Length: 103
Image (cartoon, rainbow, N blue to C red; front, side):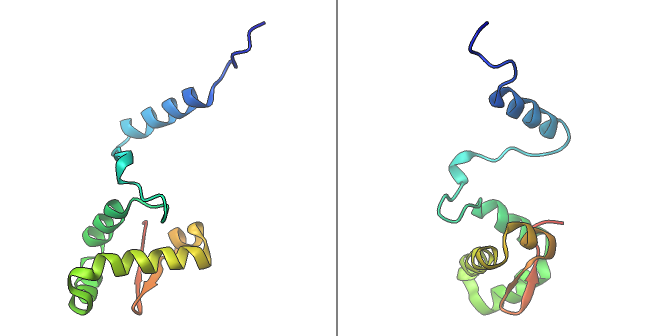
């Protein structure tokens, strides 16, 4: 009997990743992960900018080049108060505007 498990978590992760990539998911570089905020800031901002351009434009009119940081700050604050799952399901508020982190 060997000490190596028949099914390892690393192998499981590899299978899951391969399946996701084969079905349209795009890999994200680990270096882009912000450990303090537990998000990929550039990915989040790109998603919001591309999928909610009207809301982005309204916020940008108020915050200018600090729009991204304002959104990220409000997102993280909202997740701390309401949890990640509720934020993904219902969105979060940024200066009275509801933004969504997923559809």
